[in-house]
Image (cartoon, rainbow, N blue to C red; front, side):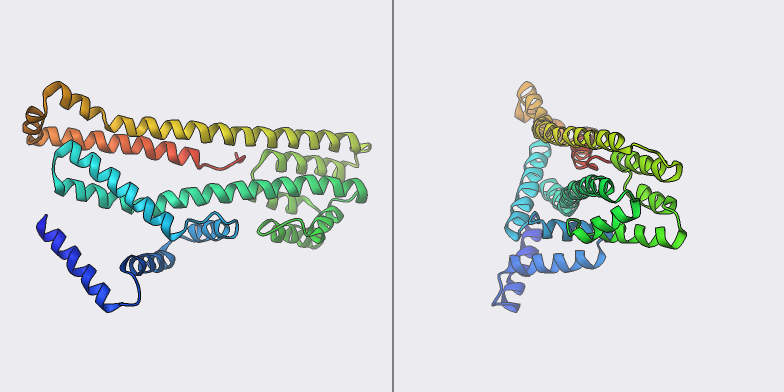
Length: 297
């Protein structure tokens, strides 16, 4: 343990002298950011950029707080289980390594919420435009030129228009959009427009009005689910962290000296490691579920 502390101290002093104009933590965060930007998956870069545009990207201070919390909690739990500084440091390092992934899940949720809002705007405005133009392609052009859509939906609408003119039908355009945005409101609306266009349905006003009401009800349900999941997630994390502390109850029953003596047995250590990893997977699964697609199938 003393060797680890000495190595960290030497690295800190070297960096401080190498870059006297910058604080060491800023240097390390810049290096980590550059490495992750280079090797991170494309999806991470997309969702992070959108979160940045929406003003929901983590600041450097928030990253540092996350690192301290993840590392501190993991080290505290590991020490409470094993009474070993080595295991405390090891679990702290593993927990800190998961910080970028946890942030990716958060960015992904922000991105999915944004996409869902854009899809809602696309559907409602295409329907309103159709009431005026009585043409699906003209409706798409009206939405394209209105300035209400943002990327990537705007580019996808432009692609739909190009495909419709190139093929002479709207079938491929609708299939393209259905495949890219598998939402109930998208598929149902497109199915209705296919019937109107291909079968020459009359008196479509009532059907479109009903479709608008269905969209409003779906959106209301999605946002209600969003609030319910946020409330549930807070309770879930509290419960998940509390599970780690059950070992304190074991220590209370056995007495700390007896517990420390028992921890030295190799098979007890395996059991304790298994408890930590099972609890961690439980928390990971709940976090992933909370950040799943908003409104998607």
